[in-house]
Image (cartoon, rainbow, N blue to C red; front, top):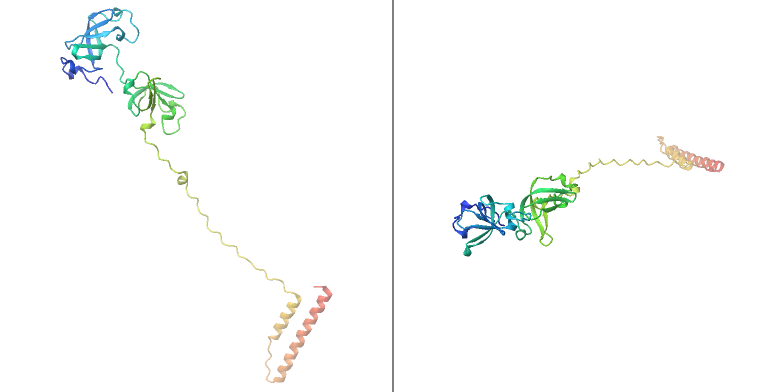
Length: 262
């Protein structure tokens, strides 16, 4: 990209081969004609300013804008070393011409206008470039004024350029680091675990014994009573007595069931 970074004092102004395009000079108007003006820039070769290069607006008469002896700022347009001729312009050249603008070019510019859909940034080209609202930041932007305001100096990257339509698409977020996405699950705190509930004790209910079972249990309890006798005869009587008692209990139980039906 060509700029006017070279100052006249940094070159041999008497060597026309060192005069470069867009170089800036301060000169004196030495002659005016219908076609333009002749300006002495101090290099030994007069420079010519065409009438169309005196100012951006149309000029009808050169004398309406400049007069002989006037000091003017001029920039080099073209150099013809073999002809000892230099063409000048009084219109400050663009820092960026269309041929200088390519994709991925990084430049600094100034915000000159805000719209709902984005911001226009002056980057030194013929027209400002557009930073769409979606290219202002990685996060969601509701309005461009949340990020920039008119007059702000910003650094932008060229996304695309349409020379035919003279459109330049720019981006601010392309020069910023993309934030790392953290999974939502990782941000959630683990839920506290509840202590294990003790299992409820299962109480087993014993079935209610029937009348027959109760009678049998009573007879069995009686049969466990042992009377200490020394004679075998008494033992036989005891066993017979126990047998009689058991039969009596069974009979009473059966009679009870007949009467009650249970």
